[in-house]
Image: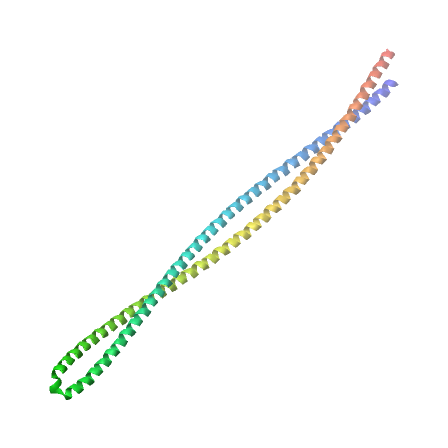
Length: 277
């Protein structure tokens, strides 16, 4: 009777042991699935990190392009400063030419004033010549001298007129030079305006690149946020895996106690069998 009881207990214990083993296998299988999910999440995390590195690389290229555009903008500004400096030199040349033109005009006015004095002198001499003509016999000698003086004064007047014409011609050439310099100054101003317009377009390009860089940074922040959520999920799965492992250890511990009880019953059964024999 005790042997039958022992056999029943043994059978029950072995059945429970099989159930425990089945539970352990099922837990190990679930642990394997958890490990697979963890590996998949780590793989996705690696892909996210690769995407972040790629975005950071593109951000570096964008920064390089921005630096190049700023360098070109600096060169454009240097060109503008050089053109403005040349424009200042041209303006100085124009002022100098206008100053020389003013001096020439003063000389012309002085020559015209001297010509007026000569003409007054001629008129006065002609008046005196009329008086001398009345006393022809007495002043023939003086009239000849006066005529010589008149001829000399008329010759000097002709030379003065020639100098005036030459100065007016040079003044016309100077005015032509001034007009040409003003035309070149207008072309320089047009080039400066074009450079400033291109500089404005460069600034617009820089602003657009900085805006795209901000969008890239936003994408990086979102990916890092997703990566943080993935890491949280991985930590949660590892925590559940630890709980599963604890359950497995507990079942193995209970199985060990059951095994110890079976061994004790078998020993008692052996003693009973020995007593029966």
